[in-house]
Length: 446
Image 1: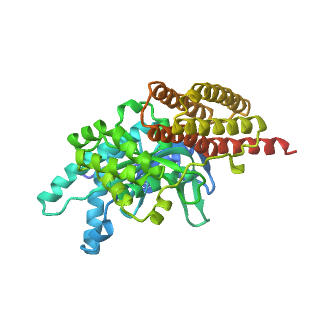
Image 2: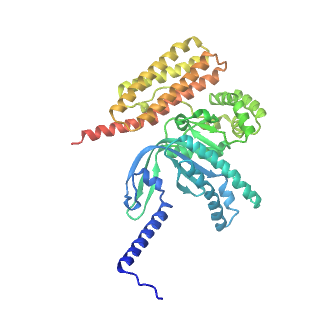
Image 3: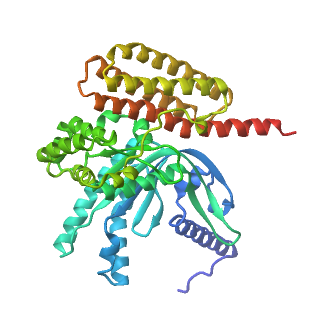
């Protein structure tokens, strides 16, 4: 019996189904090049609606990951082997990032740039999961006769601009901002210190549960094109258990050695680092510092960026009351560090009270101005203020309990108070200042 010919209505339905299937397939194909998560953040539900110049500003945690010594490794492989190796590695990492609420913004050669719109804690959990997946991947490589690989991961949290750039014939989605540059800087520094994970102080201040992480101060670094210096922290939860335990046990001794290094007492730093390495021989970062201590003094200046000692014109916010409070805070913080350094402990109680009162008044004023100006990042800004007081109380307890190493304590005051304030002014306050001036300019338009 011959098949019944299709009716015109049936043919139209078939064509509609085929067209729908083709559209879905095309959309899925595009999503492999332009992440759906990226479009969602731009408020776009259809890639056909993407236009040049669309953008949105928001808080984001940026993760950079890179394969160590990839150039040397790739030189031993053919072009096809290079692509096979890269794809086999990247296939391992993509689902780990997705499972932790992130998405891959782009691949840059052997590097991955991933974005986490929600929690910096999830970015840290992802980094540990990536190291765990790498161990499993390396087991397979070794069974196949290949040498294992290592990766470095750098993480930073901040305000970025997501948007589309390019021209009429070719556009791309991208993320721009100082926060991206600093995340890339964190990743590059993992090679220098021979550690797996580094985070910025901004990520540290934004963590929802900082007590869950094994973190230690590692250095202060200057980022090209940026004013001020940034504190760098190592997250060592992913280290072998014995090494992680040893780093935790000797954390204060290690940070004491770094304090002496940063105040230019190389002899004191060298002695403390040597004792630390004797106790934790596999601590690669300590070996890096020992190597620095053996370098000529003239070579150390560029490796040891100093915190500003006095108010500078570029710190000005543009609102007289806020600027005066900031200037007074900086002066009091420096006075506190100086009093500790020379052993004038009788001066510390009134300075501590003054710093706390001035900061509370200053921060309340800032938050009131932000609320009036409908500043979209008020919650993030207030969170940073809260974190300042947490570290302030920690330092106050150390002072009152009689911490004996004055160099260590004075450096911690400069790092957690002076360093925090300067970077807060140059980053968070400056961003609000741009918003405030832009709002004023918009209101002045006819």
